[in-house]
Image (cartoon, rainbow, N blue to C red; front, side):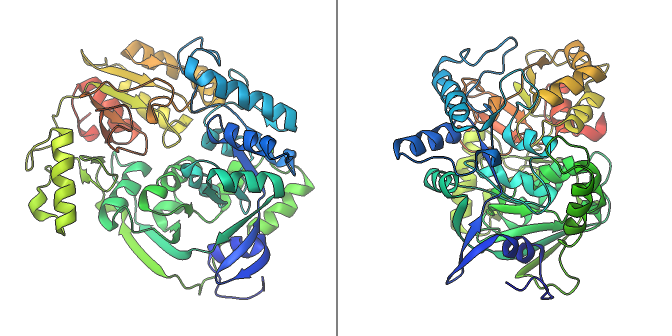
Amino acid sequence: MNWLAQNKTLLDKLWDLHVVSDLGDGWSLLHIDRHLLHDLSGTAGLFSLMEKGLTVANPELAFATPDHAVSTANGRSGTTYEPGARLWAGLKQLSQKAGIRYFELGQPGQGIVHVMAPELGITLPGVSLICGDSHTCTNGGLGALAFGVGSSELTHALATQTLRQRKPKAMRVRFEGRLGQGVAPKDLILHLIGRIGASAGTGYAVEYAGEAIRAMPVEGRLTICNLSIELGAKIGFVAPDETTFRYVDGRRFAPKGEAFERALTHWQSLPADADAQYDRDEVVRAEDIAPTITWGTSPEHVIAIDQPVPSPAVASNSAHRQAWREALDYMALTPGRPLEGTKVDWVFIGSCTNSRLSDLREAAKVARGRRVAEGVNAWIVPGSEAVKREAEAEGLDAVFREAGFEWREPGCSMCVAANGEQVPSGARCVSTSNRNFVGRQGPGARTHLASPAMAAAAAVSGTITDVRRL
C-alpha cells in the first residue's frame, strides 16, 4: 500500500495502515491492535479458544470487563443476577488464565466496554479495535477503525491477531452549522437516520465531519459514532484533531512523554486529504435540527419533538407503510396526534450511547430543583466506575436522588435487558439507549429514544416533553 499516495480518505489511511496481506477481490487480512471482551461474547470467545486448544496470541492487547449480564443494583456482585453469574465468573477466570487484563466490578476501569475503553486510553486514534458487539463503532469517535465482529471472527482474532475483512465504501456526512438550543449530539444522529434511512450505511464506513462535529467534545462524537450501526454501517468515525489529542493525553494506556509526541505526529497525518473522494457525501444543516425522538420500532422512525406522529399514508412505499402500521399499533400511538404530552412510565438514562459524565451533567441540569413525576420510574446508570465516581465527586448523584431518580451501578442495564432489568410489558419508556426494536428493553416494552436532557424532561414532567420548555 502506498501511504504517500494522495486523494485518500480517513478510511483509506486507517485501512492501509493495518493491511497484512491483500487477499484480492476487495478482501484484506488486517492486523488487529485491540480487543475488547465483555461477559457475553468475550466469555464465549475465550471458551471457544480453549475448546480448540488455542491460546491468545497477544494477551497484552486484550481488555476484559463484565457489563452486559451483571446487575446494576446498588451493592451488587457478579452473582446478584444469577443467570449471568456463570458468564461473569467465566470471563474473569478465562481472562486471568490467558493473561488478559480484567477490570472487576467496583474497581477502576470497570464499565460498559465502549465507555471504559476511550476513557482509559485503550482506544486511540489510528488503532484497529474489535469487540463481539455491534456498537464497537462507538470507539471511532477518537479516529479509530473500530467495528463489531461475530463469535468465529473474535476467536480467530484472539488466536492470530488478524482478521479477514472486505473493505467498505466511504461515506461522509457533514453536519454544518451550529446546534440550536436544547439540541444534543443524539438529536443529530437520530435526525440523520430518520432522513436517509436505517439501511443507508450498509456497505459503508461513515466519516462524520463538518463545523458541528469539529465544535463537539469527544464524548459527543462517541455518541454520534455509537449509532452508526443503526444507520446500517458497522464502522463510523471522526478524524482526530486537537480536541481528540487533548482528550487522549494523560490517559492510563495512552503513550507518555516522547512516545506521545511521536504518536501525535502520526495521528496528525490521519485526516482525509483535501481532495479525497467519497462514494457518498451527505450534508446536514445542524441549525435545522430540533430535539428529536423516536415514535416507532426502528431508529429511523423519528420526528422532531414539535412534529405530529406520522401517518402510514405518507410512507415512501408499501413495505414502509406496513412497517409503520405495525409500529404504531405496537407503540399504541395515533397518526396525526402530537407525541409531546404522551404519558411515560419509565425513564432510562444510561447505555454506551449516553452514560458518560457530560450526559449525566446535561440530565442533571433538567433534574435539579425538580421531582420525578408520580408514577414514573427513573433510573440513572453510569457507564463506568470512573463516570460514577466523578459524578459523585461533583454531587450529581445527590441531584438525581433528591429529584427521585434511582442512582445505580455501572453496566448495560435496561438498554439490552440481558441482566433481568426490563421495562414491563406495555409500559412506555424514554431511553437514552440506541435501539427501540420490539422487545429490546423487555417483552412488550415501548421505547422512545432521546437525548439525556429529553429523557430527564420526560421524567420530571411525566410525559414526553420538549426540553426547551423547561
